[in-house]
Length: 196
Image (cartoon, rainbow, N blue to C red):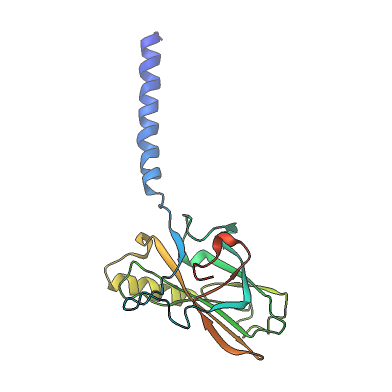
């Protein structure tokens, strides 16, 4: 085979590979970001209670998607249903319930998406002892489907939404009762909420 024949064959292979791989690269999802919700009152320009309250009984240890840590404000690849918030009870008493609620700022009427602690047996989880950690997730597939349907009713595919915001944190304990705030203490200062 001549040199120009080898060149043409290699060029054809390269073109074929380019056309085969280009759609796969385009099909990859683009980055999404998780952020803290903006609770600024549009009339006063201030953040009103309870949004100014930082929950200090629980500390956000990590945010993971498929076992990999992500940071608030930094792009990540993945789906909302795969996010896990790892929290730690740093209070001096047990905690019965923890919920981080996430919203979708790109949707006019966003659904409130709860991330909660769930037991493997489906029963209500036991009290979280001081120093213990727990993972918070979207509780079931039905809820995720409802979030998808809520976005679709407003003309948006959930896969095209690029921003999710931590809207509120709710902690219920036998000692302090129910406490809600706009943010919580974080182990990594890069994840700290703006109000803290």
